[in-house]
Image 1 (tube, rainbow, N blue to C red):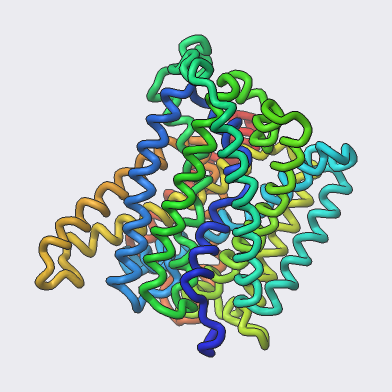
Image 2 (image 1 turned 180 degrees about the horizontal axis):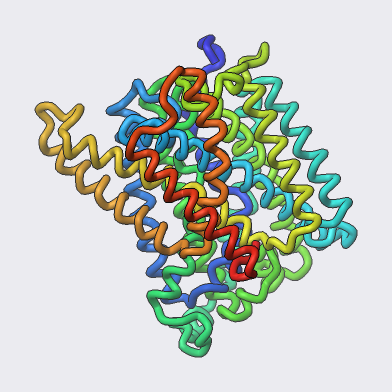
Length: 475
């Protein structure tokens, strides 16, 4: 958006960060994490996540300040540091994660309404998919009216959905019982959870899912009223969301036991509060979730269109994705994103995919952009680029970026082979758009090393197809 009146202020950027992170994940957190770990492992996992995600937040803040010419966030860092194909892959992976997350939001939204209106079932009945499709296109045409207007509505929705979360925390503080929290704290009575390391590893993708969106302000850096607000919004948003997540998860563990939490239906916060208040607890959380999911749907629709539009502006994506309407909205990118959500909504009518499977896959797609952003920040510090006469700050940023890179590598490991190979399957089709963009720029498709990277992706995709065909993997 070129005119000054369309610039996003700090409050709008913070709301985009918080709104992107506070979606379905936090309302389903008690069950999603308890199904994989006991209370002790959960505390360890949160410590690792807090440190790792804080380092990633600092990485995005540092890159926003030291590379103000790089607008677009996660994908552009991969491109600047490691070449066009890695930049494209980061943009492609982030985009898929964004709209795939919207599919899960819509399914969960109508699954929540299914508690009160059984005709919606678990969110994948014909009527639920029809209503979800209607809501999708309402959001689509709302965004077409203008990014700033949509961001303002998102700001209101963000404030509205924080209220039931705060009520949940206050009520849970009174219902919390230490003896319930300490009962089988290491999950020894449930051998299926495995050892502590295995429990921590298995819960990591869920903790990343609830933090996806931490980079939201950097995606809209070109639209920020002040460049310095991008880093501020990232840190403020991270701190507020971290506090909410840990309190909700830990307090739930003192109200219901790990097996009880693991057996709840999502949104599991409703089940926890129903344990405390009865029917009114379910109603309160369900209303909060509907507001949260609408806000997140709006945030991630904005983000998915913006990442494709920004990538097209510097020829990483094909030129047709550069088109804007009279309201300065990247209309073609938005149409493409909404169409993909619509297609996958229809697929859910015939697929056995669970909500957890969708968020695991969406999370695995975003790990590559996170990994390359941390790697680029480390590359800058090793080279000393932008650090002339600032050796102390350089050493500090070296430690931060190295820690963030180790954390991102751990996440790739924690995701497991299944989601790594399924990610390759989703990354592979992007080569057609990459090839089109390279032809438009009159450049060779791949460099020597990029050919080998593409071959590795194609090999992983073929293994994923074989595993799906043989029934080794399921969606």
